[in-house]
Length: 75
Ligand SMILES: [Zn+2]
Image (cartoon, rainbow, N blue to C red):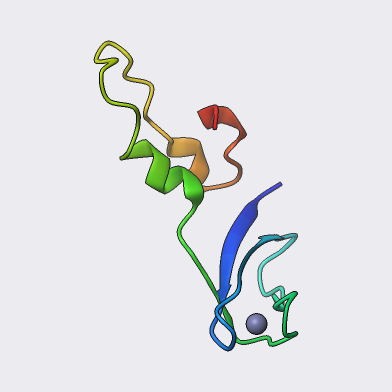
């Protein structure tokens, strides 16, 4: 299941939320505000910031993350 990172625009809390369907209201677990916004997936950051040195390892394609889950990217 897709888990997205959200950031509360009220208190600045960042948290992860499991999204079961489109249009789901995401509420801040800290202050309860519904004024939240989705952040970029953690995988998106990882793909462009992998370990340097292992040049032969080109498994950075994280294409699966754009749609559903990040399980296929290996973390
Ligand atoms: Zn909040």
